[in-house]
Figure 1 (spheres, each protein chain N blue to C red):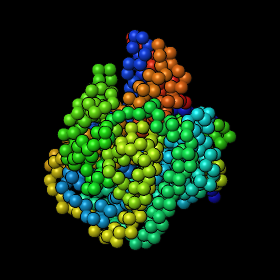
Figure 2: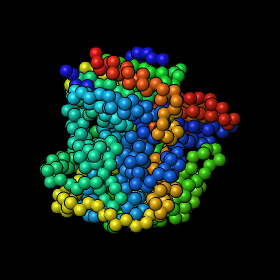
Figure 3: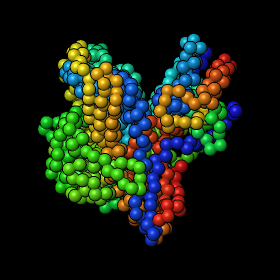
Figure 4: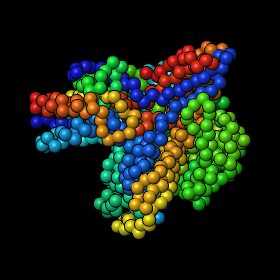
Length: 152
Length: 487
């Protein structure tokens, strides 16, 4: 049985930014399996690298804003970044893709599969502990997709 | 809608450090302005909540320095409830905090500021990132950085309960005492941290100080500003990250003010400019004269360079040796060259590591008495701490039940905002003339940014964790004539 990490990312006080945390909240009540670890938080790429080592499969749940998306849209992003190059200059914080490439460069045993469920959000600048309606409405579907995924 | 995609790089629109550059009628630079994120939202959000929740709420302001907000908030609560933490609690807080400073400063040198100096300011953009740094220093050194960081973070995790958003600071102390069983491991981590900090300073010496072009860049005029400097010092005027006096020196290095946090509003005010909603903190007793250098301008700077300039020395012996070399090499105190901040940061990392050793070897740190619950009726509490990127203030007012009626936060980046604008403006003036924008502008602005290590990814996060920059240039009629991004 493979070891799976499910990780919800977000800030609990910035409305839709917390959608990953809300999804994980439901999953924690539903999943009782010693091979599946469920965590949440708001972390940078390097910390993420610390978190994922030792797992065979990792599923992140995060918020996203794209140019043409509608709030509540769900994207399943399969990360296959290790062969690509991109120039990344940051003021602080290492982005996740760079952290993964770093892990590979250091020879760490990386998870075989990393997926991100990203939910298109509307508002991550207002303060509040509730997601907006369309985002909130998408949460059960994300939960179902993940349950379906991990049963495979 | 549901769809499966594979994308690289992942893009997201939030989290830009937005810079507006305003030109005059001749097409030359009139003003430059960095849009600092609004903290007022957090301050309003805090009102009506219990003060005791603040260490856990305010630490979510930033994904980069939550330990700083958490600890500063805990200190403000000590003041609010009129309780002094027992000695062991203070030592545990200081131990955790110095561990965080050490870890964060190292991260900056190797992974964030490193691209500018280790890889080189003139290196191709594609190489000026952390992978380029590893390529230059070698995989083994890279692994060493990761390893010491992990062990430092294990201390924060163990004592703070959580590594990213710790929960140990409570009004009047900490949530748990130091366990004997952790002592040996923590001592080893502390000792190895000192060795690592020394190694980093040696690397800086070999890679940067032995390279004339780099030294010329540091001591050059590009980011030089003769400002006031602010930082926390102990009773002997030595650098302290956790507590002490807030000391301010003038552009000649002479003490201008020294005060406790309770009096901060007597010394700091916020300036307003007609062309932006952003306010700029300045020294009240000098006055706001706009974005100008000099003794008559109330602009002050914080962060590692500010702290070293504001102090008379370091509070640990090995760091003190490097402090002396720093000023000998750069022509005496104060040093006004912004890029020297990278060196100052490493000297501070060494002090933090030396302090870790001192604290973990202090038998009193094992005392199980870590909470003073002799609470007074709350009214007002103020806390100050040195974030890796500069002085941070938390100020709360409550009713008699401890429910917040007002909150005021001044974060490090806001303290530095006037100076950051000045650096951007200086770079922009050299690269924009008659409405024509030189391609090197973005690079020059990024260099200034990384030295200040500003925190404009506050409060929300991006899926890729990056803090990209967008520059918009406006003509005299406030129309955008050019726009550039680093992604």
